[in-house]
Length: 109
Image (cartoon, rainbow, N blue to C red):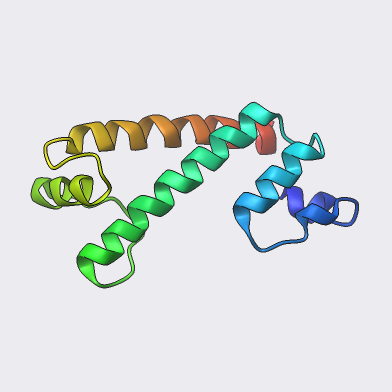
């Protein structure tokens, strides 16, 4: 939404790269640095998880793995450790909840 509203004024927003656009939005004071950091952290974590699931399943994925054994494998693949699947899920939930709060405040208030 920020890109559609402000790209005519801010050249850095004219990119298909999400992280570059978020950084440009912060540099242009369209997002606070804290909000941009929260969205960037969420984008990076969710992208790592999605890519890990794709590697495990050999097909596209849009959700967290459901079975405990799959979560353990994903946690190990992502460097959390095979016995740290709960830590991975907790981090996912914390980061994505924070990003949702930012999105709701920035775009819908």
